[in-house]
Image (spheres, rainbow, N blue to C red):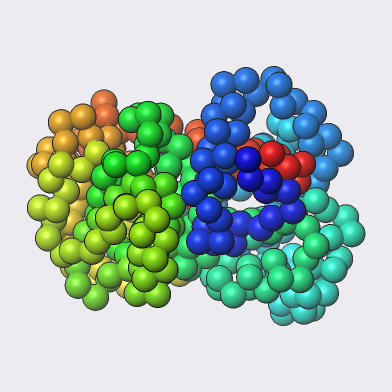
Length: 309
Ligand code: CP
Ligand code: NVA
């Protein structure tokens, strides 16, 4: 049984497949019997820092801690940008005196890594330009709920090879779920992330691939999409819209996946762009289960990293 006490979650490639399944088991338990964990983190405090907008991550990050008996303090750059007003290391040395866990949503992955390297309390990556590990854990939980297990399942990520796609590749590699990223040339996943995920996949047999052919959704158990222009790329939105239109997840494209395929989206969705209403609101759409599972996953992370499994 892995012990996650004191660990960070800056990138899932630092975790093992056993770590991921133990965390998901705990998230399942928290979902089924929340009452059993009431007070598990009484008197504990999470510090949450957001350089970018958020609904799901901020609300679940704060509510999750409250539901476990603790509290959360949220800071945005207007109150002081980490690494500008004072060094990251000095911020870390302050926060570890008052708080029990740090969550960060930043542009730079390096900033989260720097904080984790200095702070003596766990650091959780709440999304960077490169990765979104908490989302991938909630997605894995959602796929597991739908199909019983991840190993041998096939997920097609249709769209931009972005932070969400990157973390899905890594979670797939660790759990044996095959992931194909399907999108226009020039928007492939980061090669270093891809190579890293491929190395991990050798142990589980997950097949990881990239193609620009939308027909590759054929036979997928889960079809996943995300916005075409991520936070920070707003200026490219118009140009991207033209390039990505052939990859819109509409009824025709979704219909090419397996007959019992589920639809996934991390949200927020730009309906009418990367996904049509028909698919977002389809009976096999699981987008709000994913959003719910973000709560169970962040609670599991708090319990596992602060108290231990
Ligand atoms: N999926 C997700 O991270 O949502 P928010 O940007 O609203 O936190
Ligand atoms: N790729 C999106 C995910 C939002 C949750 C972004 O970074 O904006």
